[in-house]
Amino acid sequence: MPDDKDKPQIIREQRITYDDYARLEDGNRYELNNGKLELMSPGPSSIHQLISAELQYKLRQTCNREYIVLSAPIDLILSETEVRQPDLVLIRRSRLHILAKHGIVGVPDLVTEIVSPSTLKRDKLDKLKIYARFGIPEYWIIASDASTLEQYVLVKGEARYELHNIYLEDDPVQSDHLSCVSFTMNDIRLQIPNIDSEV
Image (cartoon, rainbow, N blue to C red; front, top):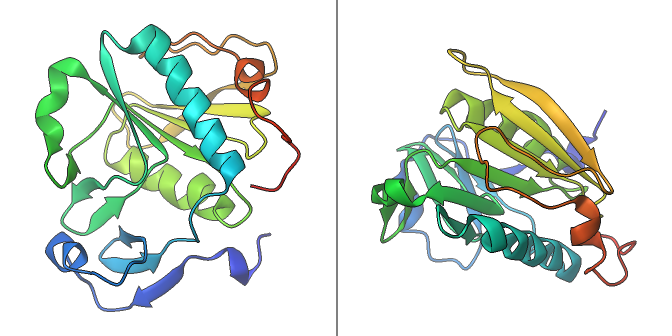
């Protein structure tokens, strides 16, 4: 079991809305979890950023015609009291109406989180439930060393995900929902120096 240090730090107990959240100007990064303000961990490490950049590059190579790829920090506004900042988001170009000046307002086609020790519980438990509840069709969780990609797919007619596949090494990552996807985790790992460094 993760210990208490893995729990997100709740900054305000009383429920607040997106408007309250948007007015914060203290230089910290937060997420809004059911109206509770949670302080995010310090900025991502260089390894985390490299994994994100390589994944963006691979997705843009094959999906750019149909989708746009956005990366953190960007607000994913799922409701007035639920605002998240996924590491990567894919939105079909025919659905760009969900983009607003201040973030994404609505449900993207894919969200991806690159887990680190400090975000493991949040990404694999909390966000798994939240993203499913709001109907995001697909959710990827990528290990902090880029060794694995866990692919969760929304169960039709239900607000829950099913683990569809775990991709390792040279397994071709594929998606029924995103047919343009075509890469392996080794494609990502081979571009990352010092992959054993802590994320």
